[in-house]
Image 1 (tube, rainbow, N blue to C red):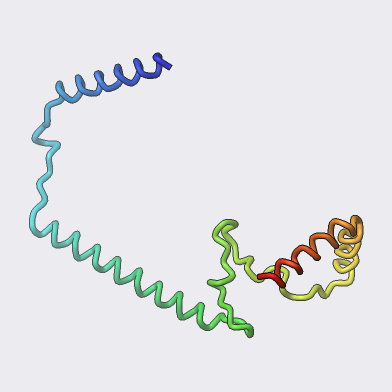
Image 2 (image 1 turned 135 degrees about the vertical axis):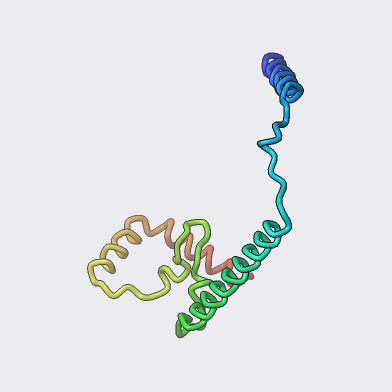
Amino acid sequence: MPAVYAIDLIAKRDKKIKMDRSIVKGWNVHYQTLEEVEEAARAKKQKEEEEARKEAEKEAGHRTSEGSDGKSQKDAYNAKTGSYSGHYGKKPVQDEGQKQQIDSILNEKPEPFEFAMSALAAQNSNG
């Protein structure tokens, strides 16, 4: 561990020496004029207004995309996965092949499945 501490001190010393030896050159310094400052403020304000307008349009689009259950796409967004997967698995499966595959998976080990389902039922009835 002392080696890491010594490296840090050397790095700090080198940085201090470099800063002490540096000279600010006049041609590297740029003073902003009042016009430049006002232009930057105007551009920033315009950009914020544009972002607010886009956000308002986006919110209006979310309101129109609400489903029959009243949940919007915003509610369905999963930030962890970065996708709209909030309503995944809430609609019944229509494909017969998928139904058979689901049943075969769930019936492979019925005891753990039944235990998990009974634990969920008990938790829901208590909570």
